[in-house]
Length: 258
Image (cartoon, rainbow, N blue to C red; front, side):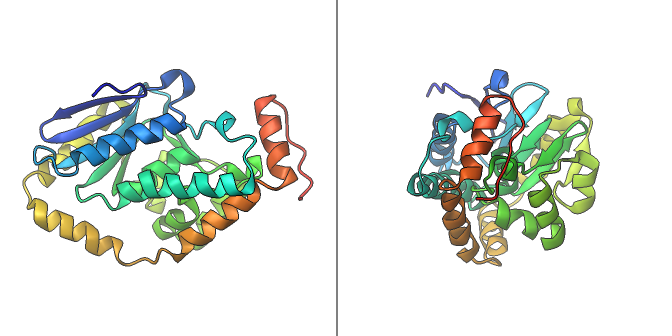
């Protein structure tokens, strides 16, 4: 199948998914998310695929965020639907995928990009990677699982700090916090992922599937429902309108807190 926003190939029993929107820093738009879901669903029963690697085209960005222009005029209900469909069809699909998924984080992983990486089972980052959740600068909060997965990975206090300050952290900080498994030079990024997969493909796919299911069972889904509700409500605020307008017009936002 031909994809407009992805480059897809299978090599050594690994499904490689490269988000191919380099000119847009691989920003996630609706069609890209739909294509990711299509690739994953079409290979879930493919016995020739024992693992999945997700990365971004080029050297600048894994995924630098969501395509903000697509939802700049959304209502509260549309915002809720955006988060709910995205979480169910892509991010939760990745987290619960029965085959190990590694995110090869090359460069910026911001907003939906970091949420995409966090939904993977493991993360390997290049030494130039920068990670963050800047949604509050738009009058929003993370809507694709960020408020739930980040504290599970790095702890509540640091997660809240990252979310409410919108600060980025570098690859070494991410490694020290447990947000990424390894940091390597950019030209070694894919090889490091292949090294991990070389061990995985030797193990029992049935046992691996069971292990992923068991590890994921430790957490409750209630937090995601709260996130969807809160994310949707942001679309009814003046801060959201101001943040998006400022972003699209390349000016500093003037938030009023309403």
